[in-house]
Image 1 (cartoon, helix red, strand yellow):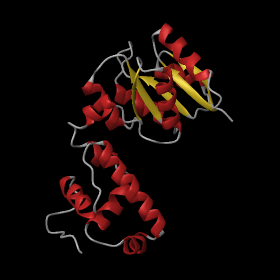
Image 2 (cartoon, rainbow, N blue to C red; image 1 turned 180 degrees about the vertical axis):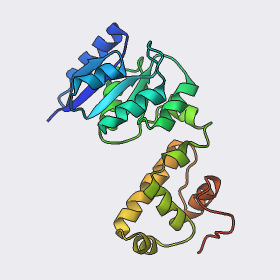
Image 3 (cartoon, rainbow, N blue to C red; image 1 turned 45 degrees about the horizontal axis):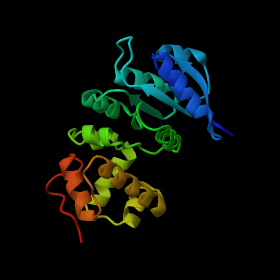
Length: 215
């Protein structure tokens, strides 16, 4: 089964090139193309992921476009021909899976799309540099459950105790912790130890200074 990809771009030459690159892969196919988000949504296609031009000519904003596409319940990868840190940060806050430049090699574009389909963050150098200056990025991007897990775990609870408190398995807790650490690392705020997680939780308002970490 080939993953079905939608592409939104108002540059015809770029669109044709990317469509050709992706359709040449054995594991993906472009099934919907559009120059605007409403046009893509009107197709009614079932998609596994969307490649979205960061800046479209209709003056729509990244956050507006990502919120609308999110109604499809699919990951969104933004791509751009320019360096626009403010727009990259906006896309990150809105929930994009990452960013890739249109000038990247075809193999890199394909790799980024595959990562998006797998639900991974595509942390290019431009993406990492942009969100490094956005202290809200990780806090906003932790899911409610991840924030809940981090709040308990960073306060000193064991994985077993967090599992008991939240009525989930220990393995699920550890999966959440791995994802939380990955998100902090992607934002340039690595938290390899439990003490680091405690500090990040303090920084992001998930703990108060009185919540001392337990040994």
